[in-house]
Length: 328
Image (tube, rainbow, N blue to C red; front, side, top):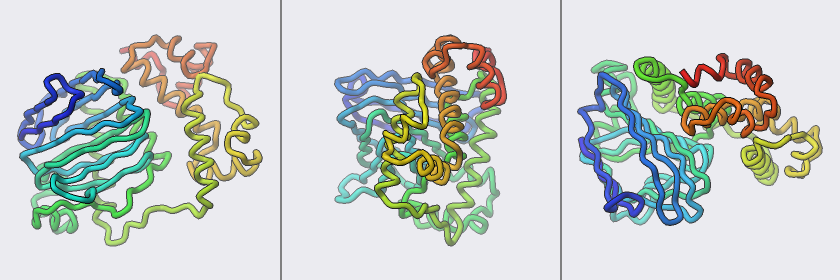
């Protein structure tokens, strides 16, 4: 199994990778690619589990960027666009096969990959879970086509298929699962076991959802202007985690009164504003400690805590373990 990416972002403008059959691996395999090109910077982290290949991108690219991609194997991709925009257009095609916007996800099957990947948005954060028919057989059994009819039909026809015409929204609960995967605090065998378990459970849930004859995408009945205002509040929170965030300030950002802001935010995100801010601060701190090498005190400061002990207490309440576990 071989994949080829062509882009000016890579040394010699090409990145080739060989994979084991069906991504099978006895041990955890990790790789980090640092991107530092004209107008594009950030990291791409690759993690190979047993039958699952995970790609996490954290990229800053104000003007966007693109890859020319080709694979010589069939593949299922579960793509989460946490921030930014994603588009795949098959080679020779006039229209994209799929587009996924910020805070959305979709799953698709490609018997062969040969086309252009385009990315927009700044910053851009994505998580891709890539697997083959082999993993489905391992999880469901050889008769998986009878259990997951839609997936079996996709493989049998040998044609590209996108499982939802419209991308699904990333709910707050799903967002927490994704952040737990991205900011996994463990190493070695424990990390592999943790990620294998987390991702397998997530995959089974979504495979069953994708197979349903009717998979309605949850829709919140709200004027577009109000939804856009909430997205602006969300982006403001993410950009100002190290400052004091209060309701009176956020009402100005939203253009709502306090009661409406609290009510509509909870209805949309499934939690209160302050719980959302705390969760986001702890997940950001986890990333700073694990992936950026910051000390606990430094991470606490970066997410708005002047007192490290207050941060430690909040972290334990929110994440269920002490931040010191991230350093082990």
